[in-house]
Length: 285
Image 1 (tube, rainbow, N blue to C red):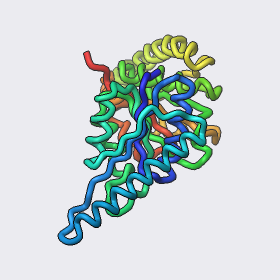
Image 2 (cartoon, helix red, strand yellow):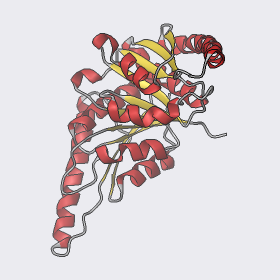
Image 3 (spheres, rainbow, N blue to C red):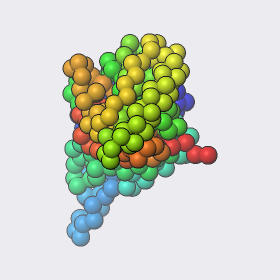
């Protein structure tokens, strides 16, 4: 679990949901929680000082409102940060300065006064970050998660994503699923035989990973190896049972047997799934 968490907020409904998630993770892990609101001024030809002052006032109100909400949720804030710069840069710079282990943010939030919103920068943070990013969205039922779905492609990034997500979900008694998807191979019996053998080995590997995750999650995750489009397989699994799910995946993981790697579908899942998504980058060597 991370020692420091950065919560990025824009005062929207989705950012409020992200605040609940960040507060829960910080409380259960003992991590320090830092909150940032970044805003990018809009160039104007006239009344520049007046517009700037109004935007700064609004930005400060958003940040203070988020701090008050976290306190109402029973959380503690180690530091608050108001930045007048591009949100992606501000969020990543702060995470680097603090040595944070996790960024939490909402998506599809509505900003004001032409400011860049978190909905437009969440993907930029995810794919430029060197640490995990939890993007939280959905209705009130989206958090806390009752299920965990890990899209596993055999990479180190996917393994770390599953372990972190299991630690996050454990206090809520969530069930788990480790999923590996292989697109169907065409061309006759030989490709089919290779695919069957690879799926068999994949199931064995997932079984070992399930044993590793059991101590973190509190229960042994189900394992599932399928021949299907990886993106659709992850989305279908996340929507099973009608209970809120957290999807966890690695980014830029390496696949085998010409399958579409989970790292390459993370953007599709992030755009499509209407619930929380945890993306873990490939660890640096």
